[in-house]
Image (cartoon, rainbow, N blue to C red; front, side):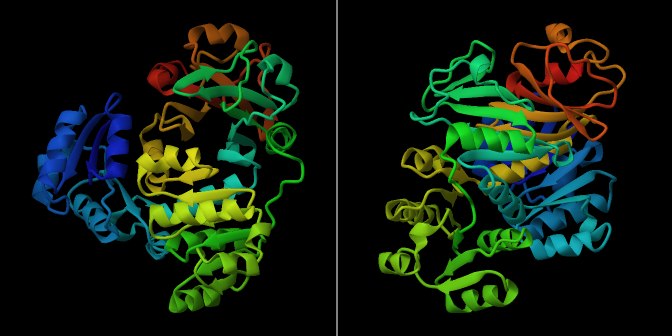
Length: 444
């Protein structure tokens, strides 16, 4: 596949990095210094120019492009890029936008703007926050097989009963599979003899009930809940997050300093209790009992403010904090100082876009730990090497860095075991080391 990316910001670079080994990639960037950096840092064609100009797109290979991704930091520019490409070609176009109003317009008018698929960053982040909030101490949560399967990533504290246990000892859940372990800079595929250590980050795949039962029993105390939600910041992400919680029956609290913005949100979200105040005011935090919140989500307009608010929330006794970060380099720092989850909107966007470059049978992907590993959902075709053989036998045809985590067959969940025999049409959810993804795809 020939992929043309317009915009070499963080999203564009992430997509280029992910695709350079498996696809032909061209990147268009207006800034000459960044375009030169792309040329030397990635195995892609770098073109310096304006992606809204047809001549520039043609120079980058528009005529032979299978996919064009417009992912600059300007919603309008991205839409114009797609419209320009569609005016002279049938290339599949993807536009990244931040404003949900544009997404609503596009969804309500087939083919609007010349965009085949639109990714709304702020909505993606809001949905991610909501998914994570439902699982105690989860760092990442994704749904597969139409919601039948959950993938969750957890940090294991020193007081967890998992510490010192082997996987075969901890494997007490009928519909859940231990998939992988991230330990410092190492990625370990979970095997029966793998021993859990404190500060490991583990990945499990299974039914929602089993994953939640596992989390409550081994990761955190059984009193954890997510009833009292506090969102700090009336940014578009903060607004969309409150709206997402409202849509699922919650009545979140939202703190916004600006009077006009606070009033606007209060009028738009009737089930959200909007408080007009500065969230760094400790007297306000005490007066409004913020310490009683189950989760505080920092969605202000800067990484530094989100870090400060999250630390203050931890200081007053909040159990769980989630912070939005724009700078990917801050992720590890935030979690090192005690922030439970740091979410980067650009990473969420890149992951959603990369899904479109996968082979036809791939239904969904989730990238873990900056794409060191992936969880993918694949529909097995009649030619798959897994069909008609026990998993214990067919695994010999797959690289060692693969775990089959779950199987969906006709709307029913099957927990894979060595004697399980996959069938054509099954949806299989796998944990895969990113370095062998292409090899695995060719077998499946």
